[in-house]
Length: 525
Image 1: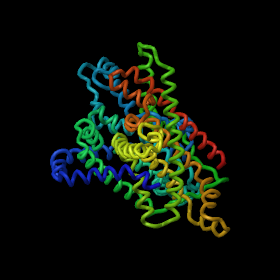
Image 2 (image 1 turned 135 degrees about the horizontal axis):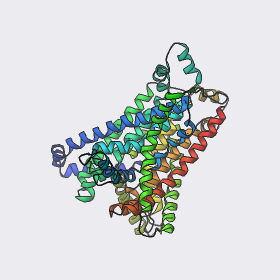
Image 3 (image 1 turned 60 degrees about the horizontal axis):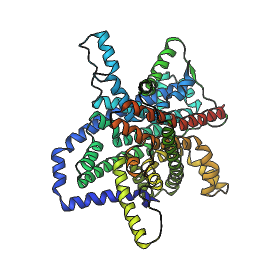
Image 4 (image 1 turned 90 degrees about the horizontal axis):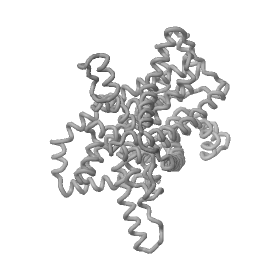
């Protein structure tokens, strides 16, 4: 299993090693020209996204899980909606409104004077804002699950010892949620490092855009492979740091069936401010760009191809469901083996598999396409009659799982971290085998984490663009592919139709997760 998931990385490393052997001066040239700027720009982008996603994810998660105020039940699920908005789509929407010729910038100049200028949206700061609006739900959903799983007596004990509400949050609530919070941030950083669509549209030069330009525009596969391997090393260091930080402090939740979440009731001005601050990420990350897209759809002056749109939506949902099912099985197996084995090489394989999330989609697609082409040539030469793997749905699902299994893996592993090993020991004393412990004890407890992991994979697959462009079968278009093709041709009004369909299709797994969360909340009452 690990060999199959790591095969693209082996190819990339082999290609990079071959380029260093044949032309060792390539690395020195990169270090003198492009690397310093790429590293600085990438670090600045990641730092800004981490700060904003932590703020927009953790604070609303705490407010909706530990407080009661008007609109809380609505915000609890509304905060998930930006997950359905692809970064490249929201980049197009904000550019349409905020660029100098945009309708919002023009309206503000009419009110505030002709000299009024909005900050340039197509910049690194604009990219940080756009990516944060889209990625903060990764932190929110992890932190909220941890906050809802806490024992109510923990905060009661802190308050009885004289701590204020803020102090109890910082000293008790936040540390309890730290494993899930850090796991969410790791997903955010991996997604940021692998982002291409919005960054290329804004003209921001990072490792990912440099890899694309070097490989696809300049035709220099060797230099692109070197940059890709450097990105892989960064991802490995990130995953190692996240694992050690979470391993040094095991935080377990103790609430279960029969315990209730004791929320502090807010009133008046305090409730209004909490509602306003919690609603801002939803407005900026979903409602505002959605209104822009709806306006663009209304302005479409050509007939909308509804039959084609529903066919693209079906393809997107089919691929998302297949990839999520496979990823969930892999995640449960790998996370449970890591928990039981307690040996260094299993942990090493676990970290290596997680690298896929940080690999740009097009690079991963090419790394998968070439080995599969070799397999097709081999089977054709032997006359085995096996259908071609290249340009097939199987190749797409394989690519999705190489890249997105990490999302499900982080969620399942975070849930397992919150289950104390004393439960395993008690079940083993009662005569249960490790397999029975997994099926009868862990999986029922991990329902929330499993639903979260499946949601993350489905939404990521539905929004995925580069790998789908390269690996999809002929005449097998998805919503992301058609939206990108229309936008590339500057047909933004036509791109808004499949973009809205992406939002609608991606909302289905989000609503299923909300239903699962509500069912778990009722079971705790």
